[in-house]
Image 1 (cartoon, one colour):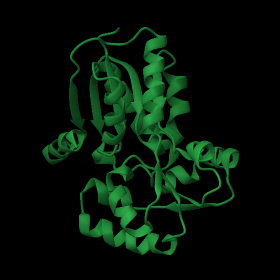
Image 2: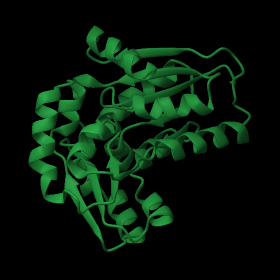
Image 3: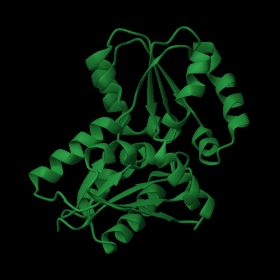
Image 4: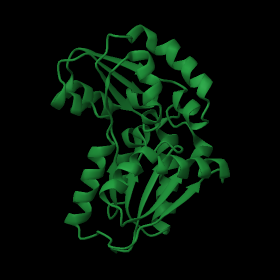
Length: 248
């Protein structure tokens, strides 16, 4: 089993931000990254649609000899991880979630903005997290369509979108929780509007948790490590951009 793969999936290439953090701690593992760009975005889909989509991806990754599956999409994690754990009790699932607890632990009292998809913000999992760690100085922004713009690398439209939605928070925010794995790809664009904010995202903690789980279950791999990229729309442009982002 040590020679199995770490399967990781997202609604597109945004999960590359998660994979980069994982590779820092686990460079010798073999990875299969599944970009589900044909169904992107997940944030506007119903719970049942998301469960069905994730179920098919998980089966595909299991058939590719996955020893653990990382859900690198906040919406999929919030909506489908409980369902997947029940359906596949022998598979280990590691799920990303918005890093709001990190604000509570490290920068509690400062004004905070949570940026996430509509699907994540409406989920029970997110609302339980918010209730538990609420600093009562938090703004929540449902960024409908933003992950799409990042996915398509539409730089002009990204800047236009951020100007339109973030200007009212300018110089008012100290913490920004990036509740979608696409958003770390545009941290510099966000800073241009909000100023010198501190970013929080769940990827570093997920990577640490994944390493602990592999060690505990004697599943660490000592090979050279390789990465296979799969895309549901078979897009060569997605593949090219994925490997470019992975090297940055």
